[in-house]
Image (cartoon, rainbow, N blue to C red; front, side):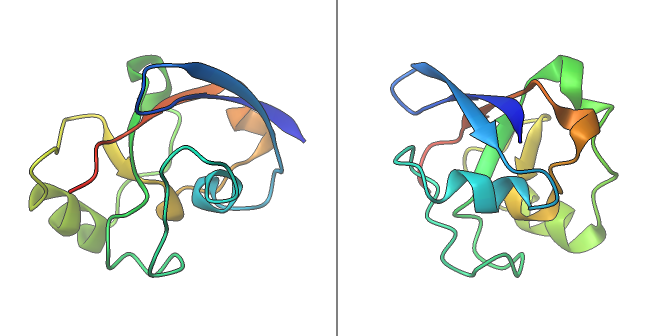
Length: 104
């Protein structure tokens, strides 16, 4: 378990004890912060869209082309957008701060 800081859609920040070895999405979908993860992590729905705090962006793995393509089609896309299903929560990401993106 490691700490993850999650800002929900109402702007409230929560400290979450997240399980390492799981995708960020898997940790978030059990919480009531708006991550539906409808496709179950298949990188096809964007219901796990989050904004990663700028200080953490360089610590995440590179985006694959399918994630980049899906994100670029979203209305609420930003430079720090990621699909949380594509990011494994590792011990090195302890303290990760992200914000849940608005529904599309």
